Image (cartoon, rainbow, N blue to C red; front, top):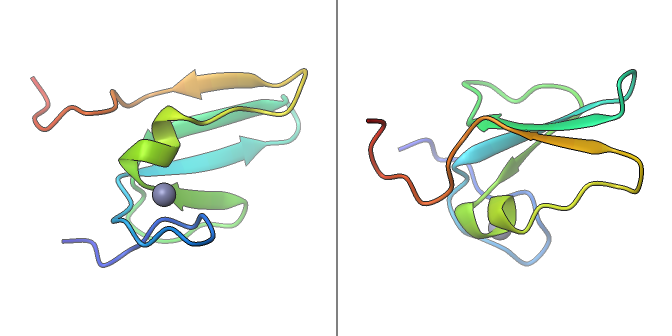
Length: 72
Ligand SMILES: [Zn+2]
């Protein structure tokens, strides 16, 4: 257990991914939950990770497969 919750308002689900904004390259990078909170990063639950949408002109990079219970 990570003990970390989704950072979305009104969402109390467990976070399974961390979203990091790279402002220099206009990229929103979605990766595995980071071990510790980092600046400019947001923890997201599976549902919100799936629905992630980046600002216009931004690129979304996904390093995790939503719904994957095991890394095979
Ligand atoms: Zn959520």
